[in-house]
Length: 339
View 1: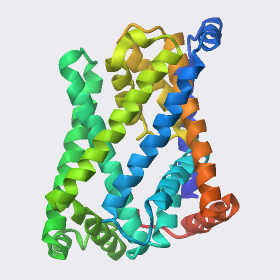
View 2 (view 1 turned 135 degrees about the vertical axis):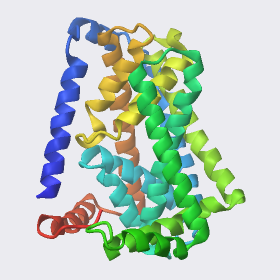
View 3 (view 1 turned 90 degrees about the vertical axis):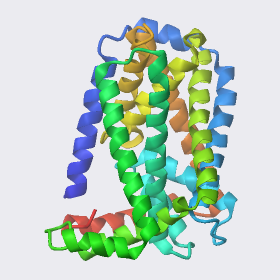
View 4 (view 1 turned 180 degrees about the vertical axis):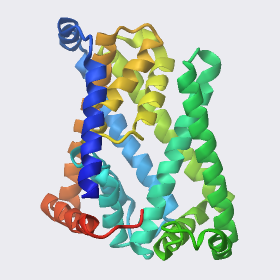
């Protein structure tokens, strides 16, 4: 039941944001934008998407502490499989899919895989916040964007720092924390304590400077790659005059929009956020919607294509994955699961 409610909320929010993004669109202008597109630029865009997945695979391998159970090629395919399922299943189920697939082989099992995925998510949010902060001196952003970005940044940085310190201390830190929260309903559940211990095991890689530096460099490379991809998409729609700053701001806004519950592929919030970013560069609504829609759709199609290649390469069937995910979700209809 909980999964159905979450899906309904996501679909409703997607529909709302898609309506807001499409409202006022001049459909003749939108058609003209796509008809005049220079689609040869999609070739380097696709190559960038594939390369970014490669860098993500390297980073994930580093977070796994180069576990020999998975080769870099296997990890690359798992990254793409995960993104494919994010685009066709609700609730970003692709993260659970690649966590399950990696956990089958890792020495630390599913717990290790999930902890590395959570660290990935935190690193990506940090990257967006840092990029947004870097843009502040060069443009006047709306107050809501500045306040929201800074509030999210403070929360993520503070939370990450606390987890790194706890990882440095080890299980004793969790024991100290549980003396305070262990008797609280739900929060003090033993499964939550076990989950936190698994998460801290993953964070251990960030407590060593020699390991941390490559993780930070690959994170920077991932997000600079996304900025370059957005910039190349401006050439597709003959909007290159907006420059790299516009591409980077679209990246920040659409990146932050991913925290909003939505339909598979984040359709709706992504388009609305991109339009708000381009509006700061005096781009009209129809052109902003066309650019953001084209960027989103091509990226999703490319990732689905790379995911299909991954499934074939790894000998994994779509049916088997959906069966496993259905079995994993089934208990939530009758038994409350720990987050």
